[in-house]
Amino acid sequence: MEKVQLHNTINDVSETHEVEPRQLLVHMLRDSLRLTGVHIGCDTSQCGACTVLLDQQTARSCTVLAVQTEGVSIHTIEGMEGDPTVTALKQAFNELHGLQCGFCTPGMLLAARSLLLRMRDPSEAEVREALHGNLCRCTGYQNIVDAVLLAAAMLRQGVAVGEPCHE
Image (cartoon, rainbow, N blue to C red):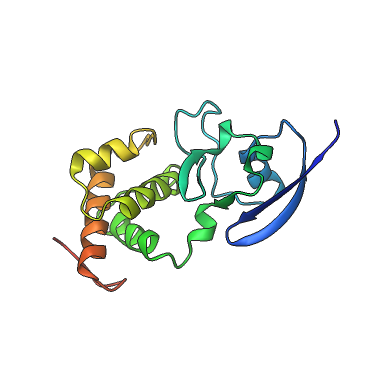
């Protein structure tokens, strides 16, 4: 099958790739670019492990063709290093035990980041709605929801990263 040229920005780096027309974005990111924070959990868009940001909106990379991202800005968890929202989320997840095995965590963090950029003070119901497509097989969700709420409080209060915050 003839490959096509794809131009996009991945984790703030403009790149050109040759891809098969039917290659899924998740396989381009994981197999070609070795961005292994994008996990494959179900291949049906049900679990959220493959969540990435396409032009700052969450998307399931297991159901997006790579060629559909022509000209799009893509962010994976690897591209979020130093992002203040993700940094606050990571700290809150750590403080409140919002992760166990870590398989779902990259997708959860990106979905939560998307929510917190839209809403500075989400309710518990709004957090649950924002995360509803991200499955966790370990935690039972309450600690994840609590961690997102804590991160929101940290961001509103301007708490320095590394400083404990309990609202």
